[in-house]
Image 1 (cartoon, rainbow, N blue to C red):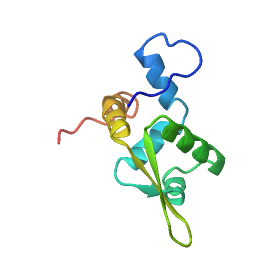
Image 2: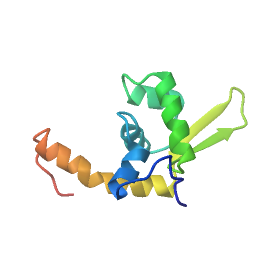
Image 3: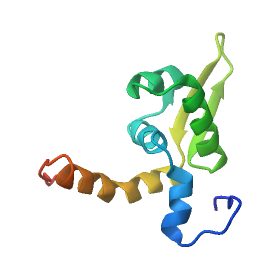
Image 4: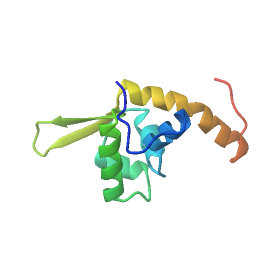
Length: 114
C-alpha cells in the first residue's frame, strides 16, 4: 500500500519519510505500538507530555497513511485499540538503526548484541 503524497514535491526518499514521521510524537507512538496494540489511554501513559489533542491528531494521520490500524470493538463502553499495520512494522524496522545511532552517539549507551 502506497502512502498518499502530500502537497508539494519531495526532494528525496528521506524527505518523503520525514513527512510521514515528522514531529516529536509520531516516532514515539510507533515505538510504543511496536510491542502490542494499545488503547488511547495506554498510549497517553506511555508518552508522558503528549496532549490528547496531539495524540488524537497524530493517530489519525498515521491511520490515514496506512501506518496504524484503528480497531473499534462493539462493546459498552466503546473499546478502541491501535496497532501497527505491516507497513507500520516495516517503518519501525527502518527506524531501528536510527535508534541505535541515538543510543550510541547521543546517549552514550554501548550497543549490546542480541
